[in-house]
Length: 344
Image 1 (cartoon, rainbow, N blue to C red):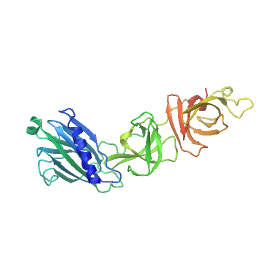
Image 2: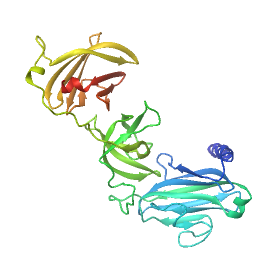
Image 3: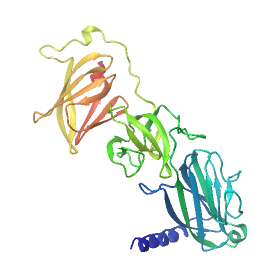
């Protein structure tokens, strides 16, 4: 049954590919199923169309490719990290050699870490006639990655920026932080769109880039995130560290707080009127106590202007938008202005 379903899906994908615009190179990123070391891709190209598949791998691993096509003038070319169609590549599948033991088969140990491009195309004679070729491309990347990244070209696996920011497909989305570099690994937590993450290094697994990250809003949480949802971040915000005059940050008469006031709160999407009280310790450190109309008290501890813990059992997710910290704790949401913890 699984084989029949896979065959049907291939047929549907080929039909969809055949109606796309001609004379172009379509780029696709490849991710293997969770826990797998390879996958089978289905496609179709017409005329001068071509498809470039991006596959992540590390030096020392072995890559094996096999192409079967309805048109025997269909081949592929392999480009290593830093190479691209139009320039020098590693091998072309229509010429046998050290990396091509037979036509349309590639088998080689890799000496560079990064993204490899597999370009599927038709020879000029078939392309000129506008022929269509349906194909399957089998991809396997085997061998474990070493403790140290070898041959890192330009993908920044061993380096890269100090901080990443989450960029999900939807503005309100979130990114899973997993226990290991696999789409099937347990989820340890989530980071909201725009959240700042400390970069602890990236590796290749399941054909894609995975990065070990630590969300700034959740000290102690570390895990792996899919690299295609990460962009270079800015790290923690640089707040105004100018101390307030003592008369501006004195305790309010009859309270234990330096400031109090109204604060809109959300629970399950419903907005209610809460109040807050803040005790400041200086330099963005302090405790914000939020009171709900039903008597619930939510306490949030800040360090350096960033929330680091709360009295809730549910993990919290924090992002900084403009001059406001957006804090999500389970079904609750709080928009806390910077002035609450910094004063002013």
